[in-house]
Each structure stands twice: as C-alpha cells, then as structure tokens.
Length: 182
Image 1 (tube, rainbow, N blue to C red):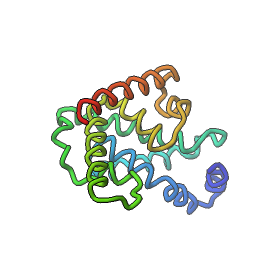
Image 2 (spheres, rainbow, N blue to C red):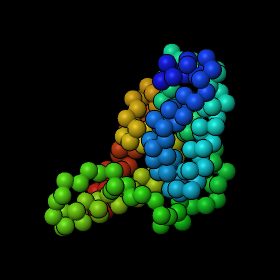
Image 3 (cartoon, rainbow, N blue to C red):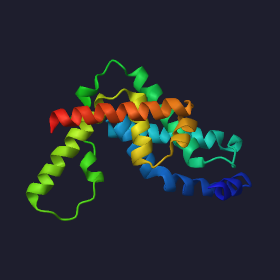
Image 4 (tube, helix red, strand yellow):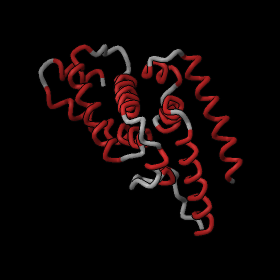
C-alpha cells in the first residue's frame, strides 16, 4: 500500500483505483453490517474513499493504510448513525442485505444441518444488532476484518484497554443472547 501511495503522490493518479479495488469489498461488508442498509453502505463507502482521496497527501506511509481507511469508515458510519438515531435498528431488520450466514463457509452438508446453521447465523446477526454501535464496530473490525486490537484502537481513536473491554463485553452479551435463543 505504501508503495502505491508514494507512486500516487509522485503523479500516477490511476494507482488510487488499485487501493479502492483492494479494500472495496471489505469496506462495504463492514459498513453494511454497521448500518444494516446496503444503499447506505454504498453511499458511506463512496464517502469514505472520497475522504481518503482528499487526505491521501497527508497520510503517513509508515502507518497502516488499512487501519487508516477503516478508521475513516468507522467515523463516517458513526456520524451517519448518530444523525439517523431516530430510526430503530429493528425497522431495518428486514432490509435486503447479504445474510451474515453467507460469510460462513458451506461444506455441502445435509439440508437439516444447513438449516440449523442458517438459524444460528440469523440469531448471531440479530445478536450483533443489539450491541451498541461502538461495541458492534469493535467486533466486526476484529472478527470480519481481522484487525488487531491495536489497529482497532488506532482506527477508532480509542484507548487499547477500552477496545479490549468492549470486545469482552460484546462476547459476554453475545454469549448470553445466543444461549437464550438456542
């Protein structure tokens, strides 16, 4: 990423498209799960890349571009959700989003096993939505995007102990909610 950014700054502006292509899917998945609205996620992805493009000349290439980009996405999503706070997440539950179960690999098991897996995935997705947005973001960044706690702390501008605490709290809430549902 650093080499692409350096070459971009040197005048090869077409290289930003490679960065977009590299992170588009992960960024969209993160924002879709944060907002539970694919159209909003598409808008926020565009807004995130626009902000990154505008601030790319000031980006410190010794840092992680992925962390920086997801930081922008995280703050953009939080800002959007705060502005739209009046809409309860329950109203968005039936949006036409890719199902969380689509991220679970399928090894061609029997239909009853697949149905049970789908039920668990639905319950897990429902459980994620009961978490406050900052805590949900921590879980998604760690579990879906593979970010370390330090990267999450950097991206969200949150102390490392807070990130760890949010993660532990989220696991406790998810475990309790899943046990009640299963």
